[in-house]
Length: 398
Image (cartoon, rainbow, N blue to C red; front, side, top):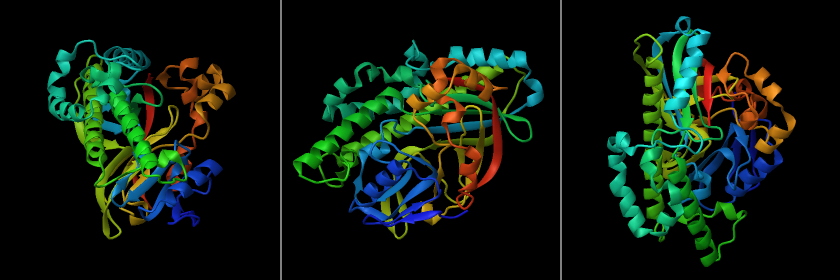
């Protein structure tokens, strides 16, 4: 499949990889395309849906400017997956329940965090000095961090919302561990702080925007370099968070299963982030808001909802998408709407065969609230090749 539609209503075109684009997402994409520093075009992935200011599922290449709200507050949110030497034959119902309980005990979820930071000291060491330098320059950040100042204890924690830990089986009945999380509370505080600074800059410079949430920081201005330092820190922290969680989950499996190894098929990729890249003749800042990098030969992870399949993919390096692809199924309804439309019985039915929470507390994450992951994959065959299809047997959520 190729680009489904092109919208020419702004300064630059919007290239869209789906035919089902809701009005609010369309409006947001057009607003982005009106910004003077957008490079060549805006790309919208097949899981696109409305966000705050910038559309989730968008890829925005910009020249000498970054939109902090497009990167968002879950900076560095992304996926990790690892294939093990275990097989489905070793996962009976009794073992699955034990592993679910063990992961739930070992990995703090929701607002919980590790109680003893000493076990995480080594993982935290590389982050301490850069964070101190940033807070010395921006002491207001210390107030913004609040209870997140104990960021060490949040390394290796899941969070809530759509974050999850899963044990999955591929088409050959091999066991995978897959998880989804980001930079936790401290990344949220950093994102919120710099989004507000960008808004103040727009007001001070009297710059009119199609949406105040598209406030940007330009290279050479007061806060630009500090934002890049902060977002780089948070993205590295998010990756380390996933690495530490993966270690904890594999250890949890080891307590209840025969000895196993982790194969070479391991992936750790962001899907809410910004970095410097070369595209279409220029070095630019590329913001992927709900999208992953899919460079030629590059492995990535595209999860479905908690009752659907997920995919390990290999990128094709399509320049029209800025070497990107979808980051998941994408929501088709809000959390509030999902809670109104579905019941706990619906959740139980839609997650049949998966050991997971089936109570009202996670009703907003019901598979029916998400788009069809198989349609998302069908819409982006020019962006990625499927390497493995995964189906979860355990799903832990906050």
